[in-house]
Length: 324
Image (cartoon, rainbow, N blue to C red):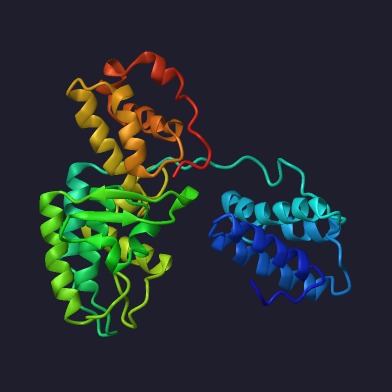
């Protein structure tokens, strides 16, 4: 919350105080605000109001920047301007529609064979010479993401005391939308996590993260992405070059959801009965986000179009923005 140096330091601090006071982690947006503050200090050192010139200098797309990343940069500056306006300060609000429409990602849907080869590659991982226990962590963390439908960030930031190996539960705290939830380990995953915990405790007996790096801290997103692409290359290089969006760690969560939907719908289960449960399991803010997966599953599995409720499908022609 400290460290702002531009003429906008006071409202920047005030905005963060408000966001944190209502329980928002706001970590990524806070990083963007610090970069914006640095730009203002360097290029507009005497300016104490948020002008159009300052805002539009920030809006300019960076080399090779994706429009979605550009939107994530712009949003907190738009929020800053509105916050300043509420305080009675002069501030230019970046208009809606800049930089354009968000590009909706179409997830890669893995075949059972691809998933099998991916986890076989994870089991073949060897220890590195850097001190980390990647040979223990990689097979476990990716299994938990897939088997529990976790967001990758939820898996990375699990604390040891979030995983109750006596009861077989995992507590997901302060995730997207600031919704806590509990998910349940299957019997085989429960046993797998028990073996992992025993093995990793030999190297980190007093660890806080469930998945500690070599220094006992949490792993970063780039490390998880690097590992995943390492597994993809070892499992089936053709997955990386397949048509459509490139596969991401996040797609393992999609695979988990679609696999469950397939089983339910093909078994004749009523989606309207199960969607509320699935929404809670995934940590969605509302069931609208969850219904999208039924439409997505139908896109990849033709039989589901015939079985699915037509009224439901017609409501899902547009995936909700920000689905995660």
